[in-house]
Image (cartoon, rainbow, N blue to C red; front, side, top):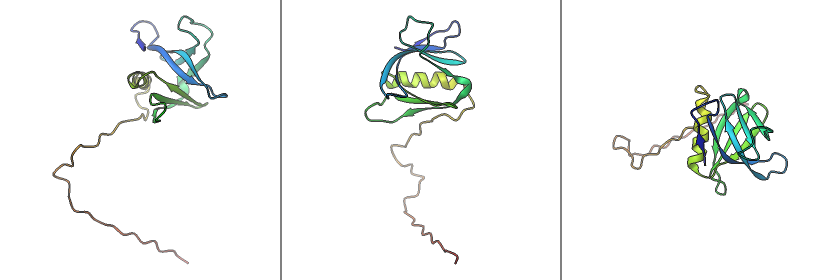
Length: 138
């Protein structure tokens, strides 16, 4: 479960699965988000000996990962590397993405576009075919 804290430097904390970079195995980690870093620990009781420190000053992007097997995945990309993470639900994944995104208001972050259920009446109903020809210069 994801917990939000209003006091101190902890913005969000909770369990996520993190894919190891060498063995490519998913490992359960307790993550703590602060305004400057994202820390991972082997358990929720430890506040020392982080297994990973993601320095947010090196942040480039955060994106949900679409996959049939791991639908709750997201990826954080920094200058150094990419971190593949998996939450227990879409809700928790979105909570992490939102919390990290709030720290970077000017960053280019993923947006969801909605497709209208019905085509508006104002849209033209005729189909137009456009043909392009490429002329190669000799």
